Length: 341
Image (cartoon, rainbow, N blue to C red; front, side, top):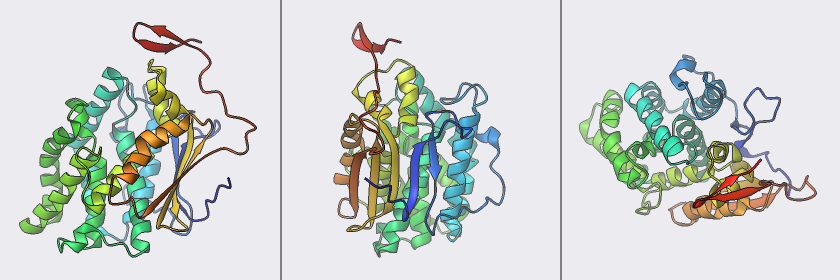
């Protein structure tokens, strides 16, 4: 299967060993005519994205910060023509309550539940993916519900997508169970603060906030998303499945089909489709990755308003003679399998 990256809007992949990014961490790549990265007007401070004991890298969290900064550049490149959405993104990116929410969501999911990243890295990576999807849809003439309802313009549609996607998982800090509804409650004061600075009209501000809250509440298909913008958030969430995302959970002892399958996904590319506006291509080093694609991403394509706009293609790396071994040996300890070196 050829790479077909000419029209790619965003690629999520594992960083090469000599890239300066810790092996197994996803690498953001923008390509195609819309892939020029706009330099941020004010550089994002590394300290704002680094906490001791981060989920990737050592105590300094440098690889994690590098990945977020790459996503930041991609996001700013997409938002440079949309001033309200860009202002919302700037305010949210530096909001101390939001930053703390991402950190605590990650603590509960990674440290207590043994899941993969649900904090700042996931927020920024999925945000970049959501804007790539939105851009392709708009290029094909698809109209979002923000515009169709008369609640706003394309700029406001971008604001809904970026804020909804970045805040969709903060409810995990309460618990994974019911995290969607918890996220809605936790997002309210942040959204009131951010949107209040951008939208002086209370009626419009309330309508924009409603679309964002719907995206947060429906991102995990419980209940199903009803708006195009919520569907974008859900599908973007599903694209964050490369092995860099699953490596930490595996290293912490989570050895199951979820973590093994995640380690088999090498690259996810969001590109212009031949038959539909968006084509999402998943390259696997091992066919075990198909479980991750089916269980996480395909469900979100099928069960959202994006179903008629997205093609999903999963394939193994044809440069390899055979599937790469993901696990060598595991041992049942109590009720769970653990990795045996």
